[in-house]
Image (cartoon, rainbow, N blue to C red; front, side, top):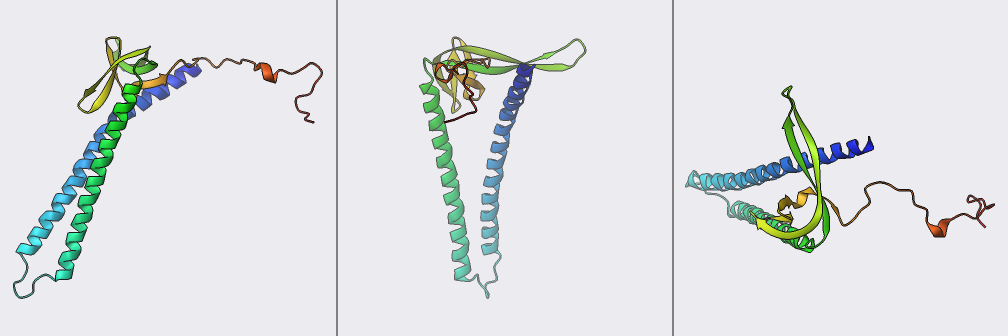
Length: 180
């Protein structure tokens, strides 16, 4: 029963990963609109100023400095996105030849019309990596998966086994709570 709970958590996290990408794209579009709105406001202010009472030079410099700061922030965000893409690409290529377990969601409709999601895991050796639309895709045989689908890298035991460490074996007649 504990396995079903873990699978449910993995299903929900995989679903949230797909929705998070659209949110970040929307946020980026909103940020660009703010920049364009600011520029339009500045141009309108310059067009509609009173000829007898022009804009103060210090105010104009202040606004230009604000615009420069916005541009600098845009440049830093762009640089961070590039670094993130390079890190993902490097990580994906480092997986070549390694055993991984990936998860995918299979959605099916029952005879009652309800849709159910089932967690499908695939385990194998990464045989290839491609870059599709800037996102690394790993291949296990002829199946392709995104990096977000990776659950396990390497051979990790699936069940929690209670193995005894030979160094920690108790000798008969000793109390483990007592320390000397």
